[in-house]
Length: 234
Ligand SMILES: [Zn+2]
Image (cartoon, rainbow, N blue to C red; front, top):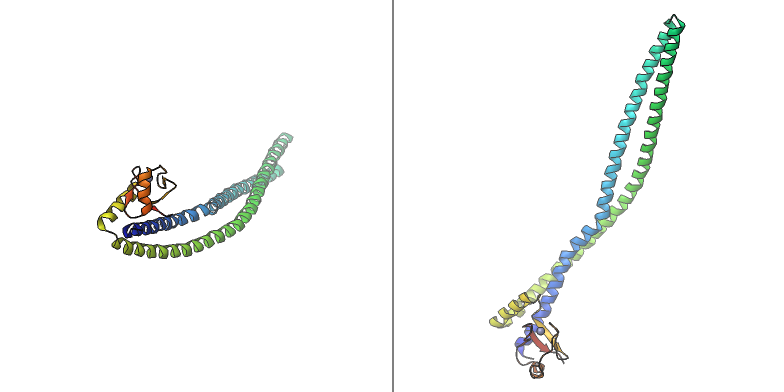
């Protein structure tokens, strides 16, 4: 094979590998981000439950304060009852006391309802916190693995970049510049195999005459359709 062509094939292989490593490096943090979504959602959910408990407890305090106020009123009414002189007054106080008692019962019922809500939410909170702990471990493990993986990828990338440099230096400057230009315009692929009469870059057929030239691997021949450089691997 033509030495320059051989170097180009080599360079293309290195560049494909560089691209693969760079993509992996970009993907790992995205994968971890994706993996952390349930953890983040659960954290938000827990915050919501805690806030709900706080509000319910505030309601409970208000109901309890209401009960205290009504109980005070009831005590005063009891005192009043001992001082009444007429049957009419007596009936009026009793009626008022009944209505206060009714109100107290109502407030106590509401308090109980909020208490039950708090209990339910606390149960849910406990469950979620347990799951959150597991999720946290999962995310941390993935982060740890990701970091190790990325470290390895960075090292491999460093090696490939060095290889690229030494190979590039052996290629004629003009040819190298052409390679860079074609790669830039053709999705990073400037050198492709020619097989079964077809350019493996654009998958279009080439003339028999050009085909036999390419098969010799003696000269740099470009695909007339996509401008990529072609080689034959037998
Ligand atoms: Zn082509």
